[in-house]
Length: 282
Image (cartoon, rainbow, N blue to C red; front, side):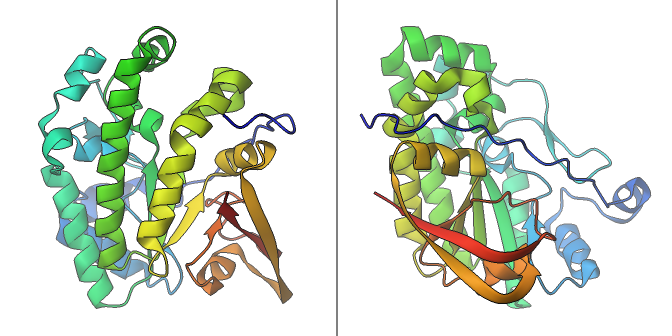
């Protein structure tokens, strides 16, 4: 296990204001239908990055989690569908690598949008965030201490599911795959547990994701993960400088999709930047 070179810094997530009106969502679009998701993204006429779906809980939803679509831009997971980790292990979608009907509709929207050469990004949660949409996280952290073998099995299955989905998204032409797991922030789980999680699961998972998407989709990690990797001495990084300030979203689209990035939050797309970090995992 890699040790800590520096104290892992926590990253304070930005407060991103939603610009989608309640009436627009409720009256004009049904976000449970691929064609409506397609129509909505097309209506934005945005030449830069467009996010699908309207939140980052797609993996939990794909596995059968309850996801509601309230009158704002972020999907929410509802009541947990599993009472225990054993029930999570028995989820048919996880075992067969199948997707829910809602996720199938999102994939339909992606197919339609890529036919029109729309630039797309999708947000994926890590294993802990995915489980947060399926079961109480208290079960997860308790088992991490007292039933590690079960956690290892569950995380391996969720990681395989994530890689399968990543491969599909990349082959469909999704430009950016954003990977985050805010539930494992250093202030939440502590430095010791976070270090264990990074070394045991997240390092391998993101390495495999970047191999799958190499040259096809850009992997953008949450700054919380980037700072953890850096403190643990797990990255080799470089900085690309621009002649003039450009929007972060344009900086991302300028990258060749062969490196990892993520020192800034994906929600800061409108921020002006003079440079951007790229890195590889050691």
